[in-house]
Length: 161
Image (tube, rainbow, N blue to C red):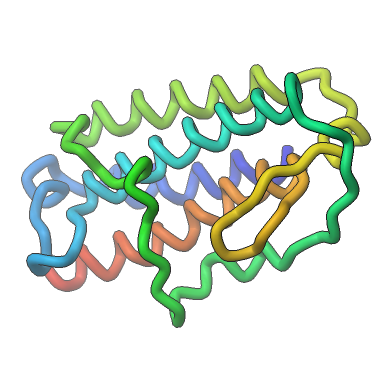
């Protein structure tokens, strides 16, 4: 659904061959380690789930235009992560990260399960780059965002090898 499973699987396949030692190495002072990137993905999905839940409960019905969320993996433009989704060192191993990502995905699927797409399309909240996005697009964004950071993790691995 929403392409989330396939995109998550690509991330999990990549980290399957990363050791815990490799996962903690930063290629530079301003860079994140692979483990920090995974924590960012976890925090981001948790935040999106929270915002979707809030929009479903309290949000007004509104129509917003579709945004080009499929461009999210394009890393030619650097986007600083909001404070709330910056890694804080919660994960110490790849297994910690995998379990965290599993937990955040379960929360996503639980929240959108049995929701009519029409309801999800008629609620929105703002994205820092795209502006107001409906909840369907927010769910799709989670997967595209993971692919963006999969490329980042591949770069990190290259730079620490």
